[in-house]
Image 1: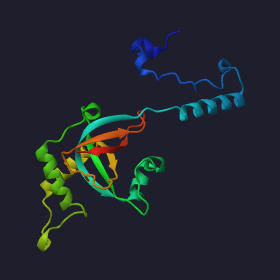
Image 2 (image 1 turned 60 degrees about the vertical axis):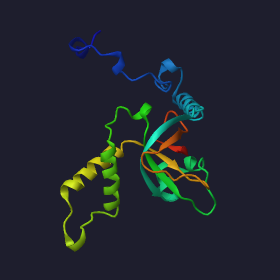
Image 3 (image 1 turned 120 degrees about the vertical axis):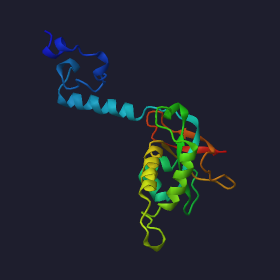
Image 4 (image 1 turned 45 degrees about the vertical axis):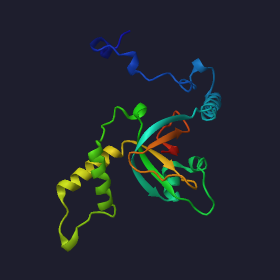
Length: 196
């Protein structure tokens, strides 16, 4: 029997969620009771959790460079990711790059070189909060609005983290970096393998 909504507007197969192995585990179609369904569900989740993930590497253009603490890095990424970085005992310097990778970010709004240069200058000016200027002058509101706009655009790009080893370049805007993502399914952040 056809539902009323399907008569008005047929449902597209693309709008329905994909069938997961976890669907219908507790039903008679799965052939079991609640305990069997729980066991099958846990088994399937464990299989998905332990599946191998492919590393992906892309060239990218560095838009911004921020020095962060190792504590901030752990909060932003997690201990398993931090353990993949070349860390020296006794603390380390970490640089967070916002990187434009054409294969992944081509659909995002882009920022021009002039805007990027202005953003990096304004970022230094407003790094410690709102700068009231000398003599108690108020901030330039148009300039601050542009800074916030550029910041929104830049923050949409992926973060790539770099721990420079001896002789490595720290990196600066408009340099090229080779970014590696350790899991192709979760490409929210990665590590910079090389900076040139």
